[in-house]
Image: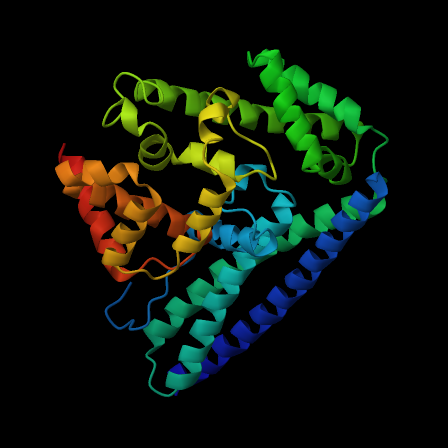
Length: 43
Length: 318
């Protein structure tokens, strides 16, 4: 039973981690666009 | 790691991240035959993205495994996955902070008022310090400008000083590559000259192929234009048709026989050598294909892994 509870807890943590990864992915996309726009500005 | 842990997943290393980075690079710039990390545009964005892809893959695999074996997993194994998760969390937090900082800087600070010519001047000055001749410097400079590097440097800098610093760093990398290539050429006795493999008659391809893949890399990287000019003349004999043929010839997951066949077809000068030194030429063909797989981010076939291990072991014995 203890292991089952632990499994559920670890799974929840992995879900949170995947959410966090999604946030960083969005942030990276923002970074890409910022750079792209700044490159246009240089032109 | 305890004996009870059945599903062990490796934490991505810098080498894994580099390989993923190369894949991303190749996706964005398919015309680049051999990507090069040192001169990548949007370095942070791509490097962090590569890391994230791998971390996500690990997280998803572990999660799936736990879901599938939820009822039977021992506590010890779960603690191991929790430890892995903590490590992933730590790394992702670092990435997050780094990217947030970069986005904040670039979004809030204006593009520095610095002209391409100013950055170029600093780039050229640095190359002069490295002892490159004027003709060489001009050539690099032209290529970099053409590839939009100076523009990219300015766009990704937040101050004039930073843009200059980046230009100097880039110049250092160019000089380093130049020097490395020169030394390697010296080591093999010059292209087609005394000491060149298999004599003067087979000048170009063995050099490009077997001893100095760096040179080929530099040549192929036409969009960046990095290649040592003193061997440019020789490498230019590789016609566009040949480059195109090479790109078509190499495919993922080729068999050993296909690799050797393609190698001999592409580099006819090696056919004579093959008559006398078949094992050596085969080894070189295998090594060449291994580098291509790595550079293009292709999966390394099992047979190739074994061969490479064997070649490395043999080299170690010598």
